[in-house]
Amino acid sequence: MFIIENTGLAIGVCLLAMLCWGSWSNAQKVVTGQQVPVSLFYRDYVLGILLWAIVAAFTLGSFGRFGRSFLTDLHQADWSKLGLALAAGVVFNLGNQLLVAGIQAAGLAIAMPVGTGIALALGLVVNYLAEPDGNLPLLAVGGVVVLASIACSALAYRAKEQHADKSEEGKADQASDDQKEKKDSPQKGGALRGLLIAGVGGIVNGFFYRLVTASLAEDFANPAPGQLTPYTALVVFALGITVSNPLFTLLLRHFADPPDARMRYGELSVHQHGIGILGGLGWGLGMLALLLASIEAGAAISFGLSQGATIVGVLWGLFAWHEFVGAPPVANRWLWAMGASYVVGVGLIVAARLL
Image (cartoon, rainbow, N blue to C red; front, side, top):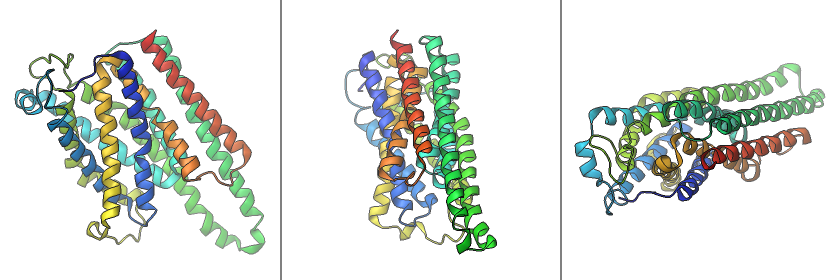
């Protein structure tokens, strides 16, 4: 099977994971922008993750002179290790569906940094306690700086909302107080609820990576009996997402779908299905990259780097989706501060592995 044995390459692969994880939500924006309920998009997204896991297992995971092939690895695996990888998929699916619901309500540029930032800070602690690897002071400072970037995103959101309130007050002569309340309250309440949902999703997602890495062999080239290679772990992880999806989709229907949504899964076009699957393929590629890099880069470092996906997501939200068009200059300054602090935090996490 294909493995990574170089620290520099492992860090580069973590950055690939960051790019993939920061970009998949664009598929959600495209499909739901066509009046498709997010719960229907998510079904295709999960299918994309499962398809990528299977294809990777029978290609990259089955050829080469290192380790065990996928089927051989699956047959010899301990049930406890398979259970950890399966549980990781279930935990991830719960946290990610909450994040998706938060993005739908509050916007990509705000919900993404809140959800992934909390997951990063918590994940750093969980993964480092399990496998101490890297410079602890640098890791700690990097995590604190990332949390500061979350505060900046919240301040940007607050500045935008205050600006919107003042704009509406200037239009008071064009609408009655009752009409204004009906117009404004759902939007404000939905955005605030989106932030809270994304935050809870971040807490849940702080644990899934530790579960899946606990199932992995400590040496991919010569894996110990009973332990899993990254390809087997990814397939079982994807199965955990798939089997839990019918239950957790109820969350999306409740929190993210329009109350009057009537569209059925079979009514989506081939193009819409394809975009959803493509989003899942992209996320799955990032997950495999992260697992392959986990030994050389370290679990805490690799997970921390992957959460730089927030920067990618924010850039998509700002420049592709124009989510802050019309916002006051102070909101944009907070967003730039968020981006700068996140870059510094991720840089410190990288340094913690190299120094």
